[in-house]
Image 1 (cartoon, helix red, strand yellow):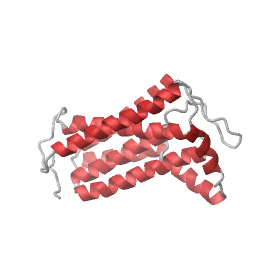
Image 2: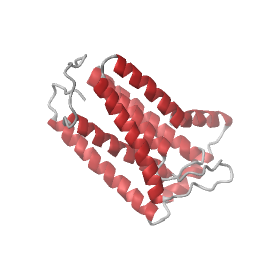
Image 3: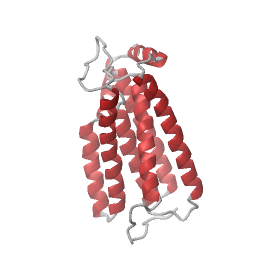
Amino acid sequence: MRGSRAPRTPILVGGAAALVVSLLIFGAIAEDVREQEANTLDGLMTPLLHDLASPGLDALMNGLTTMGSTLVVIGLFVVATVVLVWRHHRREALFLAVAIGGSVILDEALKLIFHRPRPQLSWAQVQPEYSFPSGHSMNSLVFYLALAIIVGRLWSRRAGLIAAILAIGLAVLIGTSRIYLGYHYFTDVVGGLFAGLAWLLLVSWVFDMGVLPREPSASVTSE
């Protein structure tokens, strides 16, 4: 991503700390999943959310889960990429492609590694794929937060911060919808969110450190 005039060291240190924390949290959850240890929150959150069920809430949760679906994310990715390339922001388009492409591949790889079955609930439509981590949660966090990072780079830090808060909030709501609808356990969602965050932080670090070549054009905005 294009460099900012603000000092980079605090941002890089903060990002590195967030990466370590994300990996530690994901690792702790993954270890429990691998050992097939029961998690109290898994047994608590699903019935707690299901007890709130209503036709209106069903419609809202189905709408939220659709926002994290492959069809919607890929569709929005194509639109965003076309706009970025058209506006000559090819580096940002590449950043978005690496972030979401890597997230999809990583999610599928982790599912094959852990082989965690979906929740077996009488009221839920169980899908044949594995459950850990939640791909909706992971991919939606990576995609929407990557867009927020791009907004911050091309417009202003303030706009980027607002976009990041909205992106994280949307990803959490999408994850909540997956628990509410019975598609995932609570730990699937939390694991997916932190796996996605760790991956996005890593990709951002690679671009920020100039591992990939920068474009000669200057940033179009200032703070």
